[in-house]
Image (cartoon, rainbow, N blue to C red):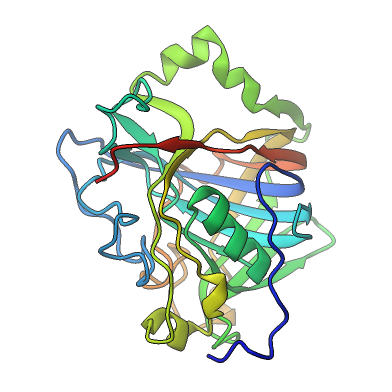
Length: 295
């Protein structure tokens, strides 16, 4: 894909401040002391087989899918679909920069709606962002449907879901990540730290299959030679959320597990009413900590 006539991508270093609305969908896989296979589609072709690929380091545990609509950020509004598979072991855990934990959460696949978010997310925090087309539709009852597609095939989604507030929790409650620093929270989270550990990322070239097949912009898929640890901050108002498959009469494919298993993993949420909608979301992505010893 030629980029000579394209507008230059804004460079926006950390830290970032963002506002918007988010949906958090937890899922679970049994924890294993030994690494277990990742679900199909959990890593993009560009990152597969590189240091960014968590294959061989994934141990199961609690994971999550996040959908976020940022109304404002340091690179403007954008939408986001994120997959965190669960706990991954840390190659750098014996170094001086290591955290107290042998395991960490890592984003293995993530789509955003703008090239500026792609390039800066990769450069600033080694987050393996790729661009996608997002189609949101919200009814008068508050039910939101979402389809996500590659830029090269915007009418063929690889992810679909329906999201609606639960009647079991009509009142929103305040939440903030600073609570994770409490003694009780630390005890409950023994075994891993409430932070993202993101390995180095490869960059794309004109020969990269993911660029050709999905319509990515080459200069947005930048490399990052560093491994980073970042602890985002967030606050907002949370209420229970019901996550449902996309209506089957709108598509002949089976959307009961939401992803297509190729461009996004199939998954089963932890119960139909354990997901969370966060409104009035305020997030901060700080300057990350560089990690040594990543092999």
